[in-house]
Picture 1 (cartoon, one colour):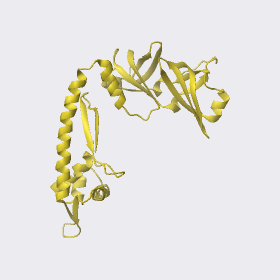
Picture 2 (cartoon, one colour):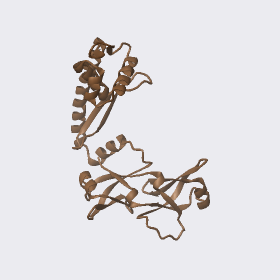
Picture 3 (cartoon, helix red, strand yellow):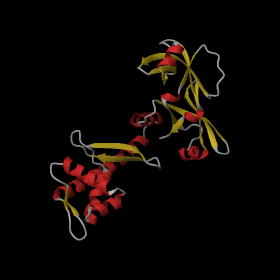
Picture 4 (spheres, helix red, strand yellow):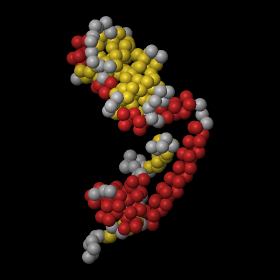
Length: 273
C-alpha cells in the first residue's frame, strides 16, 4: 500500500492511495473507478466509456486486476444478444469498499497534516514540500522571487537563489499570473542539464544567454558519448551540465577549475508549491 501527498490547485494538501502486490502493477483510484463503472453498467465496454478508456485498455486493466489479487475481482461472460456482461465478484466489491474507506481516512489525515504544517515556520513548511517534490529536470534550485517585469506577452522573473546569485526566467504573463509570482514568493527554477552550456571561467565571452553563473567544477563524470559536469556556484548550490565528451575534453574542465554555466532565460521553468 502506498500513499502520496501533494498540492491541489488551490494550494491545499491532498492525498492519493495506491495498492501494489510485490512487483506487480499498482491499483489506484483510476482502476477502482473502472471497477465501480463495471458494477454500475454491467459491461466492460460501457464502463470503458464512463472512465474514458478504450475497450482494450479497460479489458487489459481488468485482466491485470484479476491477476494481481488472489481471487478475481471481475467476472466476465461472453456472448449473448447484447454482447458480453461483466460484474464484480464478492472479492471485487470488498476491494472497492476497502479502498474507498482507506481513501476517506487518508483524506482526513491529509487535512490534519495540512493544519499542522500551517502552524510550522515557513522555512520548515517549505523544507517538507521540497522533500516531496519530484522532477525530471536535473537542476532544481529553490529561491525567492526578487523582481517581475511584465511585457505585452511574456514576463521576466528574477529568482534569487543565493546572496549573490540570481536566475532569470522568461515565461508567459499568463503563467506568471497562474503561479502567483511576485516579489517574496518562493519558487523553484527547473533547468535540464542539457540546456546548460559551459565555458571556462577565464574565457572572455559575449553571449546572448541571460544567465551566466560563475562556479568551480566539483565533479566530472565521463561517459562514452557525454560528460556530466557539476559546478558549485554559491551557498552550497550546484548546477549540472550534460555536454558531449568531445566538448568536455576541448574545454579541459577538471575538478577545481573555474567555469561559467550559461542558460537562456527561456530554458528556465518555474514551479511553486
